[in-house]
Image 1 (cartoon, one colour):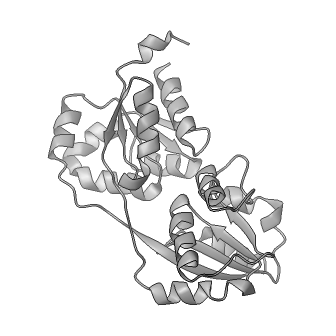
Image 2: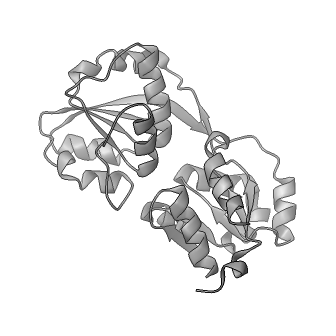
Image 3: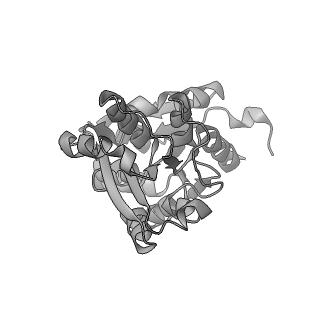
Length: 258
């Protein structure tokens, strides 16, 4: 490993939603690097509050609630609080990654069911708690038009599944002129993308003129599914963080430069 001072002056493009980028940006800056914020996902309220609230009012009928992301925890727990509904004692709580687990712990949900290694639907489905689910009622808190794999697999295993769609993702309206100018002057060393939607939105937002820069810039992603999508978009230098955490992302940047 090279001396730490060779890791200075790394310019990192952070694509997380604006309200979720602070901690990662602070960690990047604490290393002496530069955090360039360019949100590629905007988190909005769901289109149908009534359907969400109707499911929350029936929370006592479910055996398990699964929060598919940190956004699902934030928005789902806010909706539960707004209905003045307590989490039933018998309700098992699961989430996909450590970010969601931290958010749950902040609202008093200790030790949720969480994968130990792979932080995605596949990792969650491999857990024993989600293998034997025949005749169980499972509520999945997620964004609108979320990935179908988790729910479909649980249904195939005999569970009854409902979706609490508690937010929606949108592509921000943003002027990319300054970003593309900086990229063309080789002012971005590495990109961090933490969701498939965010990566796809970045690709769309920068347009054909920016694709060459993105394709040839190293990128850190979280999870093998994101790595596959990045490869499908033509990216050449893909690095996968060991975990879906800010610390693991910073370590992946260090490993790339090292």
